[in-house]
Length: 174
Image (cartoon, rainbow, N blue to C red; front, side, top):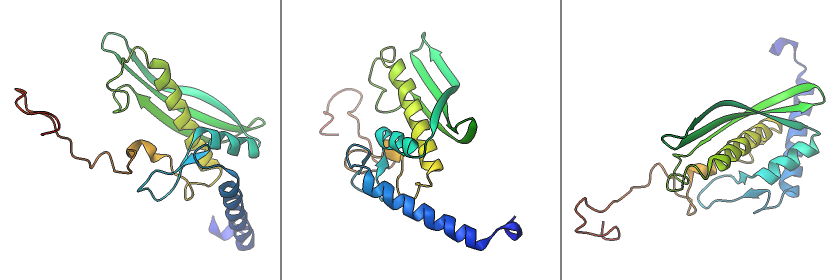
């Protein structure tokens, strides 16, 4: 494939991408279109920012539930959603997102009350994934906010302490 490429055209495309990224960074608003989590290298693209990017590019989104589980007996709900971005009738790219009621931020809530919330979160994640991909913004923004807590600590590396089983010490003591 590289033999058939115009190096000059590639260089021009790379310049356009850089210029577009600068416009996006100057146009989107912090704490509305994107957020900065302490301890992260890049800002996190939020839904309003993703929607603005798609509007700037003249793209329409279409969502499809790829997989879902709605287990009313055990109270487990999960969705995997595909976001397709179109320009007119042409498919430009796709993004994927998922969410479920066993995620840490939903685990202590009534799963029957948050079924729709979990679906909307999967849609949002798919939208942000597609927007980052179509606009070549993965080196400017991330969407991995779910992996961080508010202090910027990796959730997976954080130690968890629980009180002992017979209750002789408190959670604070543990």
